[in-house]
Length: 113
Image (cartoon, rainbow, N blue to C red):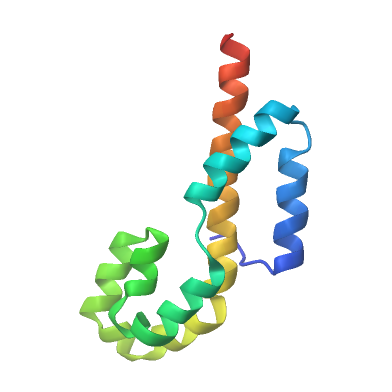
């Protein structure tokens, strides 16, 4: 399991990822990433309001964990409380995974042409 990160770590890692891209690739990346990333603040608000039902996990794409959280009523509330503290960092980590996949596809298309 990846360790959740703060905003500074997230911005630093994202800058490192896009540094080797050309200006055209950076523009393509920004478009694709802007459409795909999840907002950590929205994840926190969802976790505060509907986290008990696993909606925060569904928002992040963790369908199986969302179902388990729903069935266990937020892990008997304990899991919901823990998620309040880690959900923003988890969102940032997943956003970096999305960024890496987009960059990989851009590099693959550069190699193929």
